[in-house]
Every structure is written in C-alpha cells, then in structure tokens.
Image (cartoon, rainbow, N blue to C red; front, side, top):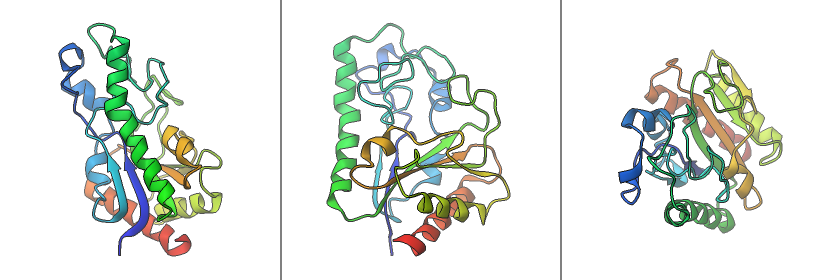
Length: 230
C-alpha cells in the first residue's frame, strides 16, 4: 500500500536550463554543492508515495522553495550560491528572470496546490538534505548540524505529527534528531499549509549511513507516522 502522502523533492536537480546556460558562471561542482546532494537517491519515493513532485532544475538557478517575488541574492532566481559564488557572468534581465519563474517555479507550485486541494492525502512532506556544517549563507554558519531536522514552522502541521516523525527517526538513528533546528520550515511548507498540512525533513549529508540506508530510515519514519495518524 502506498504511503498516504504528497512527497516534494525540490532541490535534487542539477540541470541549468538551456535558455540561460550560456551565461551561467558556475562549475558542475559548484552547482552540486548548492544542491541537495543525495536527495534524488534518498527520496526516490515515486513508487511509495501517493503523489510525488520533483524538478531536475538546479537550486542554484531556480529555487522553488522561495517565494516567486524573493529577489534576495539567495532568492527564487539566485545571484549567489550559499557559498557566495556568483551564479551569472552578467546580471540577468528581468525578462530572463520572469521567464525562468514562469517555466519552472510556477508549475511546481501549481502542482502542489492541485494536490493539496484534491483532499486525497492528509500530509505533504518536503524533503531535503543539508550540509553537515552550516554554510556561510544560512541560519547556523559553521555549526555542526543534527543528523535529521524535522520542521513544521510552528504550525504547518500538528505538533503531535511532527513529534511522531521525530520519534520514528530517532528509533533508528544514534545521532541527534531535532525539531525546527536549524530549519523551521521553508516556503513550500508555509505557502501550501492552508491547502493541506505540511512538514519539512532535512537529512544531514554527513556519512553516518549510505544513501540507500538513509532512504530506508526515512521510509520507516514515514510509515511510523502513517500508522498513527493517517
């Protein structure tokens, strides 16, 4: 039986769209460093989840976990990576920015809204991996991070559900599992929680387990949640 969840994996992609590839200043290594390494393997739940949404576009180019009108350096269409590398050889024109958002950001959120309003699933899970140590741009630069962070932005899903997920992870991991530390839940959770409850999962990229074992831990934690609340 499939998990009664909408699973979102927004930062696994590595592709630079062809329309802006000629002016992208990043190397493949820099693009990968600014993406959620391992997310594609760990969260490959298209066959396990009720609904599965992802994108192959690199986070360093278009970040669907930002508001469309977020024009910060680390906004929806970035000018610098989280390691402060410049993304573009020249500033993008406004028409180029809007074109990227229309092509990649808007459809992602339209699909999440469609799924949320369908009323078929009780919970959306936004899935990420995080650097083992906080990067220069972030809430915790230079700080070692927990193995898992479960976030609900203090209200995007019931606290009991969040605690159940934390418990499901902690039962199978020796390292720390935190709630809302260092992340409190991003734009996807916050902006779609009026359509259905959402929670965010962040797994440290520290090598405490290989990707396939991390995948099994996540599935076990999600099944633990579903047994209690779905």
